[in-house]
Image (cartoon, rainbow, N blue to C red; front, side, top):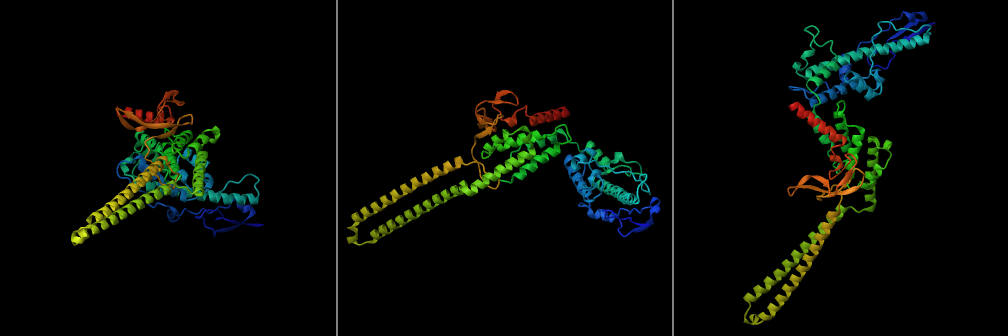
Length: 469
């Protein structure tokens, strides 16, 4: 019985779906499937970046990071069945370890089997048809991966000055044909764009920056995760514990999340992951915003109302004083031009003016006292305000506050004083038992020299000093 086999029956766009081959059952053993070529136009059309950003001069860590990102986006756009089928040709850009971490499966491109598929012994006709279909997909994807690798390699060569890859040149005939894209990237990164101690030191400084609570908390999450990605692959990794520890430290300083921070610290260790910490504090922020909606007590609105009341009181005072002075000047002008009978009545006029002036003075005194009361109340409001969660602007002018120690207790802090001058750094008012260094100290937990991130910073600084020496 004849068997119909569709040679293009696969999920690849480069395959020709219109090729139908009808062969007899026994003919399957000698049937030669047609493998479509990888069409250059189809591949390039899928690239997000038709050309990469040009690097002038020596490649740096930052410039190569952007080039690698652009190459990765292009590779990701061309889908193949290898590496799980969901990460395109990203395995041509990443190392095997990084691709496995990214995709959860290994990136393996098989060697071409030639013109014929290999059938298992005693395979049925249906099994042979299925193997032919899988064979066509594999062979087509092998061609696509090879084409994508060559295109991306050409883009990289165009984006950097050749003197930085010339060492991998293999002669005028071969040039870089036998070099893979990953080989070129590895050469540039290891020789010229190293992740050195200076970059790591700057990265750790950014990692320690507190969140801007007026902005969405997602900005802070993205910043911390970016810092972790920059340090990964080096001996100065930022671990998940470091991420959680710094996050808890930052959230404890906000004031509004102190209670939530203490509760989080009491969780089991298996619940203190970066993912769960993000969920915990995001929910805490949402709860605060929701409570403020129902209470309707926005301190900023109350403060604005007090300012308006003060302004209205001052305007009323000015108006009353102006009216009183106008009446007084009118009476004086009338007295100056009055006839003698009016001049005789001046004592009574003076008494009346004196009385009016005394009343105006009393009014001014009362308004001034009201103004002082308003200023005092505003000062109380300003002094009691705390930092708001994302979406609520506030300017905190306090020079002192509270910070969680390593035992999760909120303790008062102030600015460190040296030679009678307040310094920028905060310290505890009273000495604390630091569980990180085991001493009774005044420094904040984030500044403890035994903290993981500070050890990393110290190691990076020493490495930089050794390099200079």
